[in-house]
Image 1 (cartoon, one colour):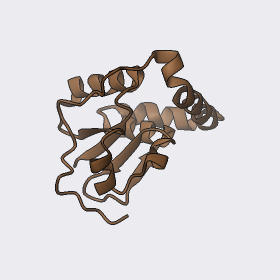
Image 2 (cartoon, helix red, strand yellow):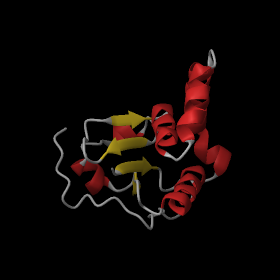
Image 3 (spheres, rainbow, N blue to C red):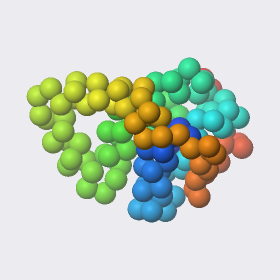
Length: 137
């Protein structure tokens, strides 16, 4: 099963997360598309306005299955070996989901001030191949 992970290719934090995932996953589960790749995003039915809400995770086999923002981070955790235990514990703690959503929003909205901005867009070693993607939106 493959997932497209859409990230901000100019955000230092986002790029660090992608590089960490690349190290562990080696492209087995995740393929990466920077938010600045408008052609690939268009093929997936993702708009620039969608990207304003944060990272996006799309099931490549069932593109109607999409997660965004902190929900994408949680689903990403579920897909990693052993990650579902941490996500389940996080979700079980009262108020953590709400708090996590607010923290994610703050980081998303202030990521360049907090972590800096790259001058060049980072393109993954394991890019999302959307040349043939033509998913209905």
